[in-house]
Length: 344
Image 1: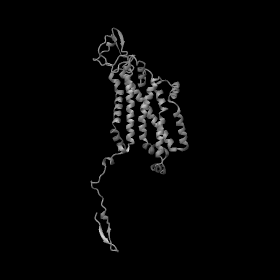
Image 2: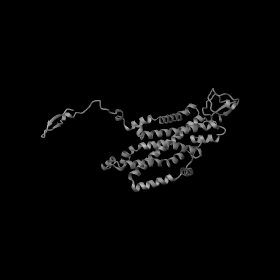
Image 3: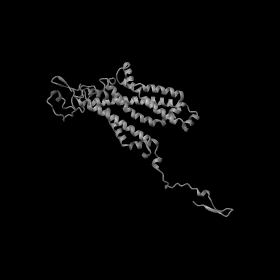
Image 4: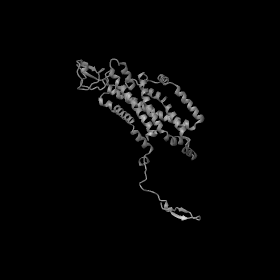
């Protein structure tokens, strides 16, 4: 920067700065983190999530189980309620309690009833009625996951709306709404299921209603906490000053900024819903025959665990993988949405 020197009245030298001394430096020598500058919030979340090995493993497991639950029953060629049988000498022989086998690799045993199915493939074997367990396991996984997704995303809408409204209005409204939450949360889930089982038939809808009545509470607490943290910020006060309606502020200004913690809660709630459905079906108040789910298949396998242990292994493994995978994905989302300083 060039400057000119002048003498003041006391004889001392002083520096005079002109407009030509201020020049905008547009050179490429300026050190700028171009990657950070061009990276939005959700792009950063996706990058951190992809760099999380456990989260990616969990996501791959979930995708594989989803694909098998959709296309797995088609690969076997049997229906989930179909009893496999062949006709020998005018008599129908049913494939009851067959061990896992692959056509062409299974050795004959000398038993005509079992050797009749030596040319058929049953990767998971058959149950005591002669139904293919491969088909039933993946069909049951489809039912369990469908129930979990329907109930959790419905609970997300209900819980978020309830929590945001409670936290926004506060005072008397918040006190009344939170007392209702405390009362609902204090009722054991089994009591709710027992009451529902008195008035509703056993099946998919009983499980869905039971989950709808219990799983929304956690969502509402998270949404309320986020509302209490955000509603005092400047941009909310500016919207209110400019005349924005309450519902617009809640669902247009606050809701987008609370979606991160809610998504994380959803990912942790899905395995809970899957396990709850499996438990209800296991104790006999969930899915009824001839339909099947992970829980009902575990119940059937448990009844024959001493004589036919292979029947209980596939549904238990699928249930364990689903719960583990969703927890991995939930942990990955939590770390991606709220990274620690050392991870930045």
